[in-house]
Image (cartoon, rainbow, N blue to C red; front, side, top):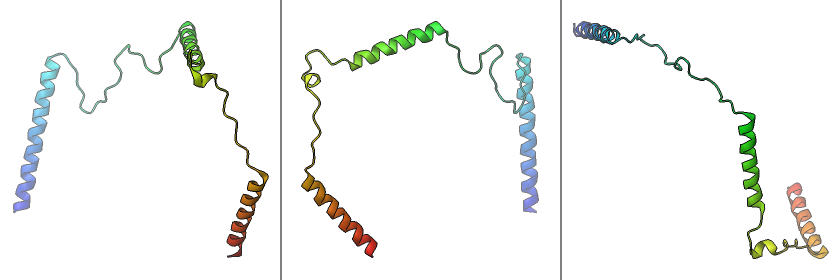
Amino acid sequence: MHVQELVKAIKDKIAEKEKEIERLMAALSALGETVKVGAKRGPKKGSRRGRRKMSKAARAKIAEAQRKRWAASRKPAHGDEAAKKAPKKRRKMSKEARARIAEAQRKRWAKVKGQ
């Protein structure tokens, strides 16, 4: 049977690969390393885990530097004309214009509600 021959060939390949893995494991252990198949790699012994700690003095130093950067960015540049000008005043709409807009909106809503 053709299928049985394929199954036998696949099993032979699996056995061959298992022997190759065993041979490689023996070579690694001869080098002094212990290897577990499927073992997950974790942090090395003695390594730090989690978030790093920062001293209060270091945090204060960084905070002060950031405050200085913000203060410098808020200051207007020397001789900057745009900074010297007063902010533009908002334009006001006339009462007539506001009444026309309100009336047009009422008509739109009446049309929608009337449908």
